[in-house]
Length: 143
Image 1 (cartoon, rainbow, N blue to C red):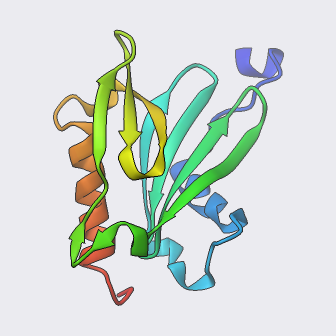
Image 2 (cartoon, rainbow, N blue to C red; image 1 turned 120 degrees about the vertical axis):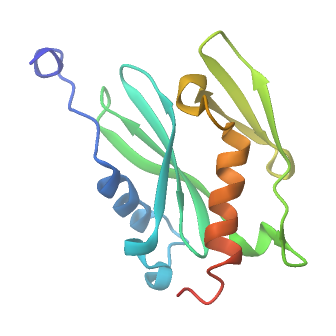
């Protein structure tokens, strides 16, 4: 009710986050959304950020309940992540605040914030590399 009174909508469900990548200009109809994974990496009262993995790309998606925005902001193609049959992402974690970290994507010259409490048992870099391996190496044919 408070969100309604403040003019905010609720956050989108994981399935809707995955579906949102269809609006990205490089999205391909053969990306098989039913096999995609979405990883929430950041959460605040008004915003969540996700990485969505298909067998062709990794997308960064923003879900902003205050501004009613659900939008893929960028994508990184599999062909730029897999080098000589191995994942090559150059991920670096840095502390940003007590609750938030910054994840640097070395070859992309950009970074994203992440919520540390979402990655207590395994670090964010390890989680991303696991999903990249699953989608980009063990799923090369798209099957």
